[in-house]
Image: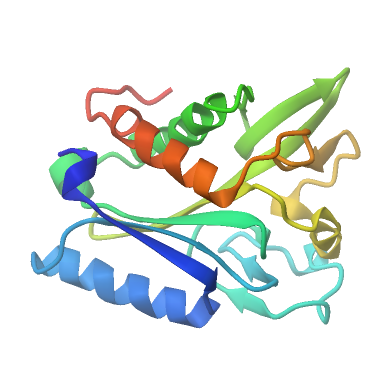
Length: 219
């Protein structure tokens, strides 16, 4: 399967979180039923926090700052908001590769390849989900979050890449449960790169096929 066999859905403006969840639920059911093709949906949300299945209430530092949604994806607390590109990924792993580890590795690889288009070196870290950018010394900043869910081998939820969000909004949570002072959050613009959403979308579409090659081994 190639990029051309996937529906790429790109939304302008801010998409309501509950609307996005309802769309994914229906699309996953339709993919399982064989009545719809796979889909990658690129969008932005209004400011909100999501709590994954491993979220700890003490990591929600400012519960009244933005709406908080409990979701079925893996992971802990995450911020979503304007300036952050969300990619909701709905794939049929039975047709591709029924291996959760392979899938998460492919998502990570996809983000890394897309960032390379802007000469940004994103890296994986053992025990820390997401993609990190070394900032010198022991400092590392997270530039992309990953949270996945599968239903009978059909995927949903996906990735969030910081293009130009208000990074202060991450202060309302302990992002992904990591409170180490040497670990922060960054974005493409924070790194000094005038990247637009459209630029990133092109990079994501261009690097998708190679990242999700079924022959790719989980790392």
